[in-house]
Length: 107
Image 1 (cartoon, rainbow, N blue to C red):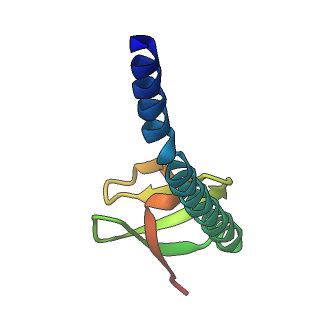
Image 2: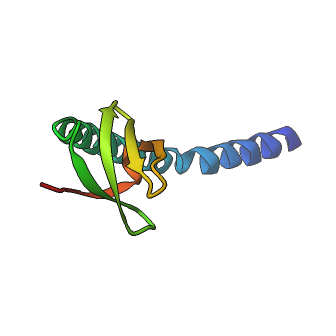
């Protein structure tokens, strides 16, 4: 008889744990949808930046001021930029597309 009480208690705990399971699934689905949207935005940015290859641009990153650079190459996730310094040494950087907040083309 006492075993029925233990079984009932375990069944109750089991139901309580899995009662929140659909909520977890919904949260994970929302996260997946958000990641898909971000991936689409990055792909759009990549296609737009490919039009600027070879041009001098003013590139603004998330936490810094704009920097004059020439876009050399664009990938799905990365941008290769060349920065001309005053002492005539060029610096080449690889930058993630998601870190770029604004691009202005200098004509």
